Amino acid sequence: MWVGSHVLPSGPFPCAWAELGGEDTRVRRFLFPPSPDPSLANIPGLQYSVEAAGAQPSTPVAVCATAAACATPQAAAAAASSGAALILPSPAPITSSALPPLANGTRALVAAADHPDGVYALAASDGAGTAYSVDVCTRVPADTRCPDFFGVMSVMRPATALPAATNTSAGAPYGAIRSPVTWTAAAAQAAAAAADSPLAVLTSACTPPPGVDASRKLVYSWGWDFSGLPPSLAASGFVAVYRRYPLTRMAPGSYNVQMLKPAAVRLAVIVRLLDANPDVAGTPLGVREVVTVGDSPSFVVPGGNVTDLTFVFVVPPVAQLDNVAAMTAVARASQPLAAAAVATTPATDAAAPAVAAAVAAAASLSAT
Image: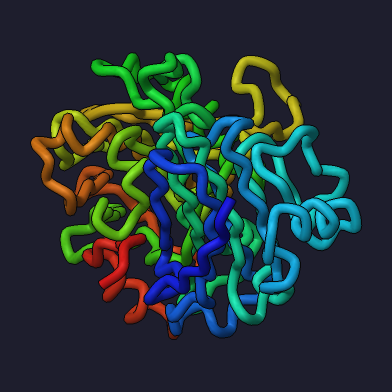
């Protein structure tokens, strides 16, 4: 055994990673410096997700807050027994609290405040060619109040968000999305609900909100760049969820929905509302969701009080996108010009210019 020490040139923005080929039996200690992303400086409760992507029990990874705790495997084991380190793959889930540190399988979630020097990872190789990577990404908690009326976009592995559409065989260690994907309203809702679990999310960030353009269309645009995400995601694809953005003044009625996207990408729009049962007079308001998973000339938002919108993106492995790393997808919904009400954000009138400016921006989770 030999322990080498490596400091990555930059911290996660939104992710940083170290790849191990498994050709030797060395143990390596990596330091992932704090994220250089200036937009995260004032985010309360910022977290780091740490994943040993593709690791097996024969290739353990220790996650530590200090160099001493990750100095050797023996030191890491001692630190883990006292709660000062986490060992991945975790022999048992550590999910007794809603707050980090948490661990389950090959992923851990730690508080950035507890890692002022960054994240230390002690990674072993088995000498049998078991290749894997240690991926460290920033995570903004789902309940964060983002600045500028932004919402939280969460990125998950397909095996977490769409297990039925994922190849989890031995030849697909990262759980790649199968092609073609059977894309239904139920699948979109299940993927959206998966984002509510902290350990399901690999990385998340504050991204621009939906809004209304000059043609009175509800528009949401989001872009991604595989070059700023761990290579394991290029092999597996990912699911991104912009969860429950509070857009409360969306008008009921029929919408023409258009989804401008690469053919292999799947996109869904979920509108949640409080709606009384129209067949039973006096029925109290109940939560209801209406979903569209493709272009629709008559997507109906029934009468009721709209509470929020969710957008779900299913991005396949980059090989299914002709190896084009950076792309964008857009959802548009418009009512006839005669409609009395037009969707708008819940922000105040003073915030309208900022919202309008954000509408056409493609929010990227990649380093620039």
